[in-house]
Length: 135
Image (tube, rainbow, N blue to C red; front, side, top):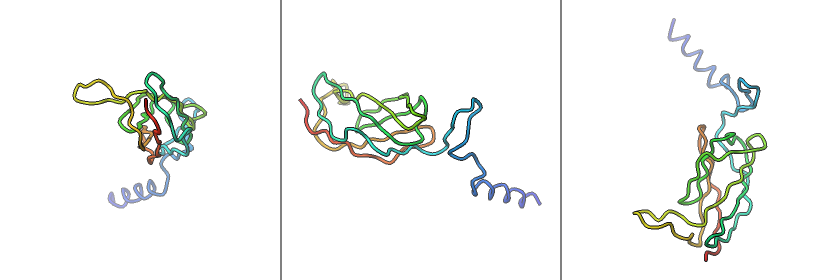
C-alpha cells in the first residue's frame, strides 16, 4: 500500500504539480524555478582597449534578482543583479582577463567567447560574443 502512495506522489510531481515558473514567493514577487535563458546580448561584437571596460546588456528570462554569475570566456562575475523582473542584466566586462600561474592579468585576445548566466536553478545555453580588437 505504501509503494502505491509514493508512486502517485511522484507521478504528480512529474506532471507539473511542483511550483511552476509563474509562482510567487512569500513576499508576493514572482519566483522562477526555470534555468535562465539568454535571448540576446548587446553588443555582440566588442572592442577591448586597455583601461576601457565595455558594458554589455543581456536580455532573457529567469534571471535571479541579485545572484547571477555572468561568465564570458575566462572571466566570471558573481552576484550580478538583474532588473525588469529578471529579464535584463547590465554588466561591465573588465579590460583584462586572468592569466593564471600568478602572472598579471592580460589584455583580451581577439576571438569568440561563450557568455552564460548561471543562477541557483541552472546555467543558460552559451551565446557567442566576439572580441574584434584589443589594444
